[in-house]
Image 1 (tube, rainbow, N blue to C red):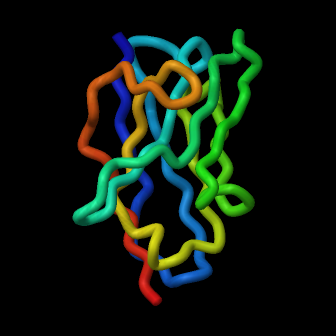
Image 2 (tube, rainbow, N blue to C red; image 1 turned 90 degrees about the vertical axis):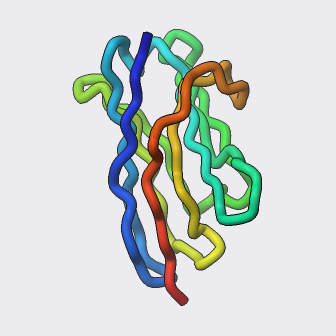
Image 3 (cartoon, rainbow, N blue to C red; image 1 turned 30 degrees about the vertical axis):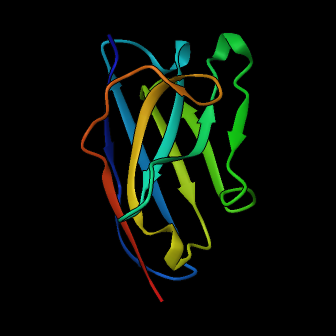
Length: 121
């Protein structure tokens, strides 16, 4: 079973960028659909972006809030899925998680620790 570990969060000013990493072990990210989710204080966890397996065409799906600013990608050699976040806004502040999904958004894995992203105004 694939295990995923998130990293790359931090404190950034509004308008800045961060790249989050989701490193996999136990299976390959190439054969799994992976989604990035976030949960802000007092809010439900929500999908940010997802990418289908390579055999399913590597399709990408984005939440409206992420379109045009965030990019999900996969590096099969590093067995890692990334979330490049540009033009960050204070409302992007949340704990970000990655998980295995049935594309585009049905979670099928266990939640990890996540990585905190804080955007200051």
